[in-house]
Length: 503
Image 1: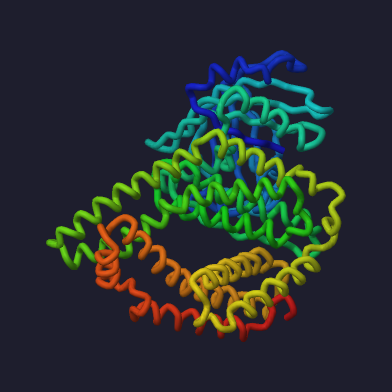
Image 2: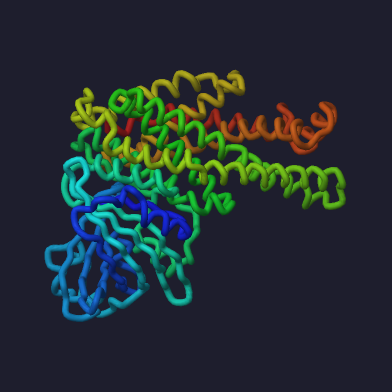
């Protein structure tokens, strides 16, 4: 069980003398670790979530096979280690591991090195709140052909005891240097270097929640999945990558939806603090996304069709300035101590929060819980959307949020209610809700763009109205009617889909 925390290379010296490193139970150790990761040319092991590593330390070789317990795990992974005589894998030693089922004769013949890590590791062992923890300060690099990626991270591994102790120790370290929750393993970052150089946006990954799983454990699996999407997109968002910012916002929305769906299980004072912080960071990211979409979907096409329009050129400069400021604001927020500490607190709450002990309904099956919540969400969307043409902008916005929440819940529980009939209904429901979301989202974008025009492009109300009409943002514009019709048709499709959880 591991918790990874990244730090800036310049902070290594401060971390090494942290008070949190005082009084280890054994003398500190230092090692130079050279690890080579192996796979087939088509990355069959990586695609299966299995990692094969051979590590050299002081002339001795250790083969390690790792795999996540599930695709939703944050902390826990299966791991098999064995000392081997040479620096190449001993595939016969993979019996009884996650690697064994993947080793067809063809794959055995083509397994080769794909990347390597070179790490200077300092190891400290502690007794914390009755638990045994190993803290490792790693510095070095991941190398794949001509590409390299620096590594500066603190890894806390629970050798025995309760998860809670990991987070207590992590917070003590965080008092010394800024620490950022790291979701990706060195192996994952290595594969990114090999395949595309890294730094790309990460979308939500699939998740399988079996019906017999306890409701509390199901929430943890879903919340970890959402948290990974948020944290994995953090570095590229700080660098100003628009798609990563978009995916980070989706991860935040999915997590908020998960908390709402499991509110009767996780709801408490701590959950209210978590929700407040999630809303805060969402607000900090929102303007950058709105301005990017406005520039890409409205201003750029308009300028292409009217290249000599001096007014549009001026407006474009003003929007670009506002967009740059909004991205700086977003980067500052996610680079702040508040955000870094919140991510650590959020992970601790998911894993060890007060709700994990003695909460009513926590140990009941997720299937029972999901049926009730899905039915409740479906009923609310049907009731609120029955006459969406006559809803106000704010009412449509709330309907869009409810529809999005139901869609995320349907995706969370797709595997909980499996079978041909359930799968078909689920796909139809998600498709209809996506179209409803797109239609209502388009209408919301029109309102947002009108506000941007009057607030950032036009010098007066009359100029704002004139420019809004020129780009099709008038309330009576044909595109608004088309979006409204699309929303109505999507809602009709949604209302006609039978519950997939009752197939």
